[in-house]
Image (tube, rainbow, N blue to C red; front, side, top):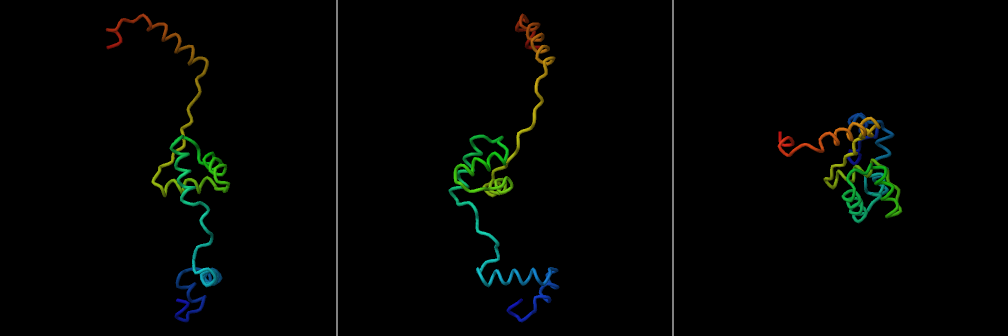
Length: 127
């Protein structure tokens, strides 16, 4: 559009963006020949390491995976970046559910039940 001679304001009105936004994008493209802001943080090898971390322990939260990743390659990554990389590799990431701890009453009830059924014959277990 800019090559057609349109002004930044005209392009902005057409795309529903401000003229400063349009100018910034066009200037970036003229400097770098790319619309993207930043280079990619991780390499393919880093992504494979991340997948290996996940397969080792699937219930690890993403912030822990990000810390492990940082220790392995020295590059800082956010937990959201970790989740994006896993989705790109078609790995569905899920956090482990919080499970309630057994109270002392639950423990005692379990012991009582075990003592009660310890002497049951096999026929009673099959009921």
